[in-house]
Amino acid sequence: MGAKLSGSGGDRYREEANAEINVTPFVDVMLVLLIIFMVAAPMAAVTVKVALPPAVAKPGTNPPKPVYISLQSNGRIFIQDRLSDLATLGDDLRSQLGATRNPTRERIFIRADKDVMYGDFMGVMNMLQDNGFYSVALVGEDKS
Image 1 (cartoon, one colour):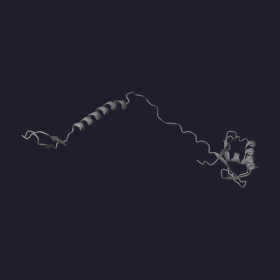
Image 2 (image 1 turned 30 degrees about the vertical axis):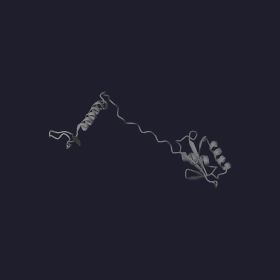
Image 3 (image 1 turned 30 degrees about the horizontal axis):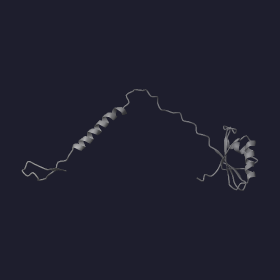
Image 4 (image 1 turned 60 degrees about the vertical axis):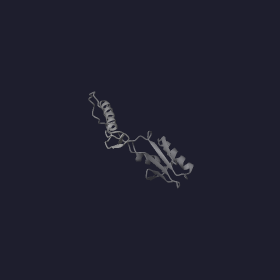
């Protein structure tokens, strides 16, 4: 809203209210936006023609399922969820892996209860090495 300080009347000090909307700032803002869009629009359009190949990727092979050996504090040994013992650990592990997986390249994950005796753990490790499983990873609990 604006104010008119002098008018066509005769009174010089009489104030009159102007009820017209001042659209000048609105028009200024709209013109600036129009210029911005006129400059930015050609940059977004790609004018160079390129024959792109189809985006069809060959599906990759899934990594093999990891093999876990679990040692309980009472001395029981599990391969995945199947019960095994120290004497047949190598054969049971080969049957679990199948014929297509190479034991010398296979990583075996060992999970042991915190109360497992060190000698029992080393017996499993030695049996794995005796049967050709040289890549062994130890699994621990993450407390972070």
